Length: 203
Length: 216
Image (cartoon, rainbow over all chains, first blue to last red; front, side, top):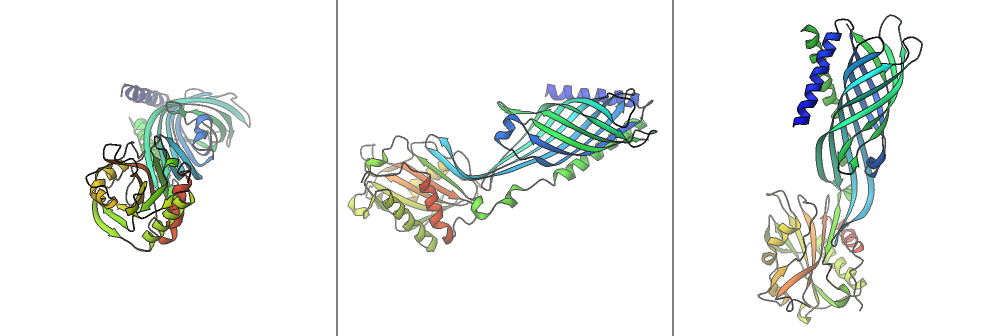
């Protein structure tokens, strides 16, 4: 509960900073499509990429290169395994078709730094941290064993902007990211992702 | 305060969009055939020596258990197929079918278990009423109790299923007048009580129990 309070306090602080910075710089909105690939122990459950991914975020430029913001994303992972017999120990065995369905909604405070102020392509790097809302359903046949958790998460990303105008912040954003996503002891839902979207200023 | 209101509004809008988007998640159940939906759970007493049993007998009808109450025995096409297939599988594993009056080493009970009121059936719940479902007198052991020596049912399962229990009559007296379950098989899922699936259900339960064989 204390960590949750700290998280919301941090979010509030960022929002206040953003509001103050907004006096000089317009808030930018990022929206985009995202595809993610499970990594590490996540692959024990799902190896299929998540094609249903979306991301959105608000960012306030603190200067020409650095911006702070808040982002939210959604990724839907699913994999069905052929029927197999699972030894449960102590004389118990279960034959089942297992389906794993996992949805992740990371809500993060983000910082982005644009490496070049000018140019047709402007590379950037970014990092974020926050809360990951996870819904993990494992189906044995038609029988669900649902679990939902909220865990801390962190992300690093890199990519580039392609400005569409010299006079506004509107740009195409293309990048890749890695999300560190602990779920339970010994189980992480870490993933690699690629995303493409658009950034524009809110007047 | 105007910028703050704008940001709050956008955040709320974002969450709304996220809610709509998340409702697009793939429904795993829609990608399952009826066969995929079924699960098969077997449990056995790891202390039992299945090779030491030689004969078995199987009840000639199926007990219908609804909400932990026995509704008596029935024999429809599905039940007949199950009983026949269980007999065949036991014979193929080296056991000899004998009448119950011949003092078989193993007794086999078959049940159709359905629970509609409490919503949850687990193996321990099912075993709570076992003496009421199957009178030990039927197997020639009046006054004996039934006993499942192991904790079974890693998952609690809703609705109906086929239950097959193999009971140790050979050692009942030496176990303190207890008829001990040495193997349980459970099939659940869509169309589980369909006659066309009966043989496959029994075969699946036996195929994941290779230890179930006699030296006969």
